[in-house]
Length: 185
Image 1 (cartoon, rainbow, N blue to C red):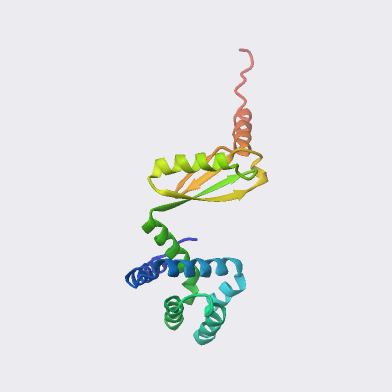
Image 2 (image 1 turned 30 degrees about the vertical axis):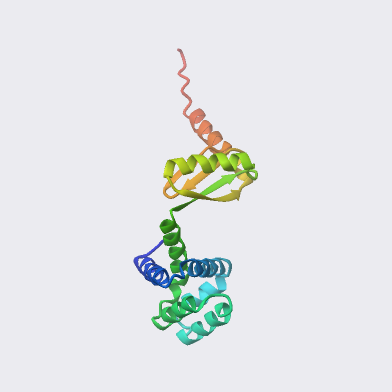
């Protein structure tokens, strides 16, 4: 998700308020839930982005979905967003809030893509190397993709290490297409 100034500002404001009221972990869980619901339910996101649907209807839908699941502060925040006609930013704000929370706690997220599930020793090795490099606690998100054939791809922040078999084959193919053979040598 790309973060705009408005999503980061609202997320930072909610973060500061939750920190001030000693509700940071609870609000983080609420924002993670909202983020998950928005990513899994595209109809909800489309409704929130629809300018034809009134702010009151959007607010009622948000209350119906989240009123029993999130705390009062988070629900009040959703009400404010609806009143200010900022409800289409909810998914971005929730995602930005979780990122700010992880940064505050000194936790970095690394995505590891492999052809098969990682073994515990591989997971511990990757975790240890990344922890030493960043001086942060590492949270691994594993993704299984059989199309990489073997090896792994690690993505963290703006960095990527691609040691997949598919990429190595692709690079070899490029090298062979150059055909460095010169006739008569």
